[in-house]
Length: 302
Length: 215
Image 1 (tube, one colour):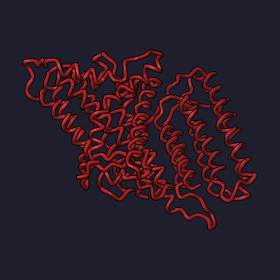
Image 2 (spheres, rainbow over the protein chains, first blue to last red; image 1 turned 90 degrees about the vertical axis):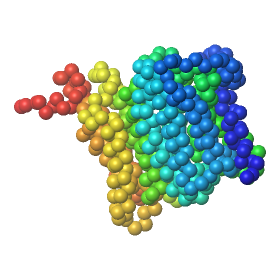
Image 3 (tube, rainbow over the protein chains, first blue to last red; image 1 turned 180 degrees about the vertical axis):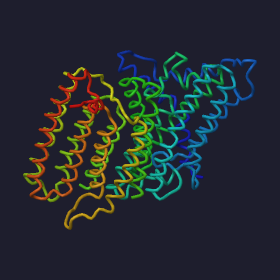
Image 4 (spheres, each protein chain N blue to C red; image 1 turned 45 degrees about the horizontal axis):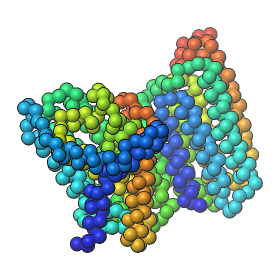
């Protein structure tokens, strides 16, 4: 194993909260506020880790397993993503399906943990989460399928390896796939057109409402897993949008990190300029993502 | 060059999907206007063998008419009829979008079987995209109730015909294109007036009500 393969997982573990900080800073800048420091997410996680957890007597081991297994699954998924010229530590044929369904496992456990508490609000959040992710999943898989077919490789590493052989065909496909992955990024990470991360009204929340009964280190794990998930989708988007390589390792990594910061700012801009969609309109947005991904597949197959 | 043509063609296909999925009349009008501007740009970029004068004329007329004049006319009709800003679909937005994806597949299949005249060097995606735009226009006319969105569908058909014509941008195409554009201009002008009259007669512009008319 090459030492450079560990660069991306370590960077992700270290910088995922920073990305959330950049998103918050961008939103604050749009609102004309100073906003929380960029490092605030680290402090929040640190504070939560030093608290004790409170468990309701009605809950079982599922509530405790949810955040821990989520974190483990997300870290595993991160290990499959190549990043800016560095190879992924884990790579095998078909790992893109494992990648997609590791997030499915995360979702299942978080939903099970939410249902385990017996709270009706959490049940509503769980129901929404499952509904929307059922529509986001075909978009992600179709986009990955288009890219895999184009690159002629059944693994994420090969698919994002930056093979821009025939730009006349590949650039439109890359753009379409990026649009689909971008919408999935917003939907899966509870960002604004789908869910408002800042809302505190249980009736409208999706992700936040599912962790209402999670506290202390468990909340830190769930939050950290969510941040890493956001990093993973953003890294996937960057891999699709910035397929060019200079060949120099540090330059490639720096380029990818700059692109990640750009994605974070982009999320902030979307959150500041758009209103949350009504819940009935969210499936249409996700269907648009599916349509983009299907168009990409059709273009590749043609 | 082929690269830019492909990007534009994909963008045009995406505006079609937006047309199918958007629930507001205003954004429909803007989308179809944007589509017209894209077609104008396509006429400039896609002109094989340098820019001929007629290519520039065509592009300019396209951009001015479809990007500025038509939206202005439609927005005026929208303002004067005080209609509700939401599209009333006969077929839901989600179903429309899925049908759109299906239409893309059908158009690509037809496009691959359609024999093109010899000597035409169009991007292989142009003909399917033109057909798709045309079919989305027809679909909009059938599946949306408001007269205004049906005009938008008509404009989308017009855009499809223009895109089709651009694929065969031969010398004599200029006259035909300009003739079609003039027709479209007159049609939108007249439709604006008709929409106004429908809304004055029925207090709304639901075209389904027209079938209740008797002589």
